[in-house]
Image 1 (tube, protein in one colour):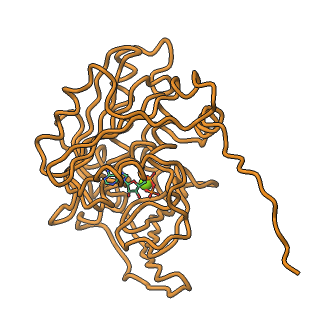
Image 2: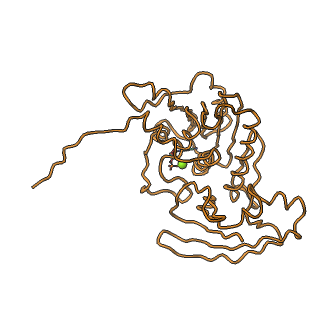
Image 3: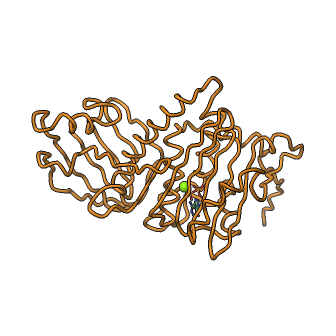
Length: 314
Ligand SMILES: Nc1ncnc2c1ncn2[C@@H]1O[C@H](COP(=O)(O)OP(=O)(O)O)[C@@H](O)[C@H]1O
Ligand SMILES: [Mg+2]
């Protein structure tokens, strides 16, 4: 006997769903790191971060020179849940859930505009949470083109033959009421420190794979293991084969304070200082996912599959 499942199509209401997805617990720095992950996955070797302070009308732009997207690819990129976590990914893809671009952006802003250039053409699509909230049908109204007044920002893409620009506007979470310009500048410093750490393996080494700038200034890598310092001791790399790939484990002992100059001692302390920065550092495809520095894991931004490296900093 054939069992027939009678069904109803019950899509989520766009405004309710998008508001709910705003609370996934991103920090501003973690959200930007997710946007930069996408640029790296798209083979970009240059990523510019631009912060424009203008009170509640402040904006943040991320521009990369990656492979870009055509119109259909851009529409898929803007769609929530277009790719399943079960889908196969290329080895350099840092994505996983098919949600990061949207959830990371909406954790900080109410309007997300993405413009992408590929094959000499630029396409632009936009989500606006206020437009979704005002819509009576609960539909997923993806808007075409930029909001008025931001065309000059989109012009930044003209400098590259292919690439993608992500624009965050209506930064209600990143610029809460009462936020002053100095708070914005302090947040920029915090974001720089976080990105310098998360992407240090892309930003450093003899032949850096990523040139990341914030308002035109290059972000210098911050290596938790001081690998280039002659007084650092590093163990051989241990390779553990597991079902999903290989885990590389390495142990580092950092130099005693007496072996460091005053400048080195200050600059190597890391965002949280010498004592707090010791612990376990977990990487996936060279990207720092998180650090376990005392009793709990901090700033883990995504769970991981595939090839990973674990480094123990002591
Ligand atoms: N900067 C970018 N350049 C090219 N393609 C991008 C970029 N950002 C996002 N995309 C595309 O959009 C898709 C969705 O991105 P995202 O929501 O972050 O999910 P995920 O990274 O898990 O796939 C990516 O898989 C990629 O195909
Ligand atoms: Mg992603």
